Image (cartoon, rainbow, N blue to C red; front, side):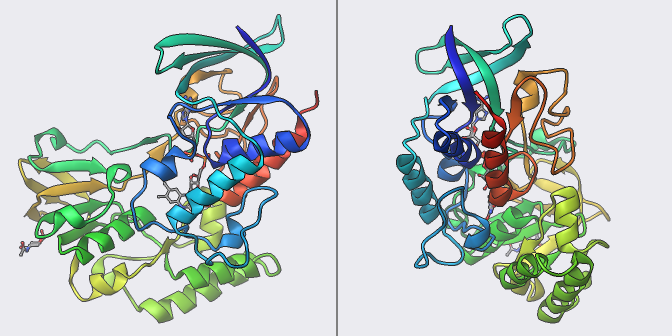
Length: 375
Ligand SMILES: Cc1cc2nc3c(=O)[nH]c(=O)nc-3n(C[C@H](O)[C@H](O)[C@H](O)COP(=O)(O)OP(=O)(O)OC[C@H]3O[C@@H](n4cnc5c(N)ncnc54)[C@H](O)[C@@H]3O)c2cc1C
Ligand SMILES: *[C@@H]1O[C@H](CO)[C@@H](O)[C@H](O)[C@H]1NC(C)=O
């Protein structure tokens, strides 16, 4: 049994930011990570052409802004370098290949009893921590919806977290399911690499330019969102035109308000819209079922595909190991309390990075947690 003051679970941006904030206040901690590296989502579960969708001023971790010389939209590789520099600067030494399997509060000792597996040695490790920080991410595992007879599909079916680039798909017919940022960008990448590309767009979505989102996020600090949202929506409509003929319509509620209310992000167009408009990328409605290589869509259309990429999002898994009577997290592994009261539970348990507010939200959570822990 290892006695700890603070145990941070997960060495992604949220865990690292919390570690830095604790160091800043000279509070001792241990940070554990199931993979063999930090920021595993960024290193091994994202596509090659990914850049941060938001401008750099909204994506910094605590105490380390990006240099003026950094590009406004940081490419994935640069972001990983930034994370490595951050880790080194704050002397953060995660213990890797440690997967937390359960955590429960022991009222007798006033400690969190945490059981973890050393995935290399295959041994069980027990921790007793005064404080516990859940930083295992909203993206802990990829989620694929249940589609009747998907298992009968003869081609390759992968989650977007396993997609790297379109190089190996040239000449193939590929269906991308999901029209969030990942799905729209992967469809673009596939088409650019010569794949015959189709995309499933099922729900309304706000297509925006990155500049309009940056403008909106800046304006909303000074002007009510009810004024900013229509402004950027009208501008986006001017840029993209009416896309309803292609099956793409906007949600009723504006993009910034939607993000803050539901966590759903606007789609930052990387060139996909032009390819949809000129017919290079074909749009389909929802999938009804799959038979062999054929996919049947709502409305009765059938098409054959060589591969399907599911850009259908992710799930948190913290609810599977945190045993606190669903005090901090709900059964989806996301905070039970609404923002801004989401980050603190009872008996010294906290969560960082689960409020669907990206890297800016992570920074705030980390600062709040470090300020709240008194030893
Ligand atoms: C494709 C993509 C693009 C994105 N772009 C942006 C963007 O431009 N701007 C922005 O602000 N946000 C963006 N995000 C949101 C993203 O969630 C954050 O940027 C950030 O990576 C979240 O950090 P995190 O530390 O909360 O989670 P993660 O980065 O997922 O880190 C959590 C860590 O916990 C580990 N872990 C999980 N379970 C356990 C366990 N049981 N025991 C031990 N360790 C565990 C995981 O291995 C992982 O390393 C993007 C996300 C994706 C998927
Ligand atoms: C491309 O895909 C679409 C949609 O599945 C299909 O209708 C079309 O025949 C395909 N074209 C080629 C050249 O394979």
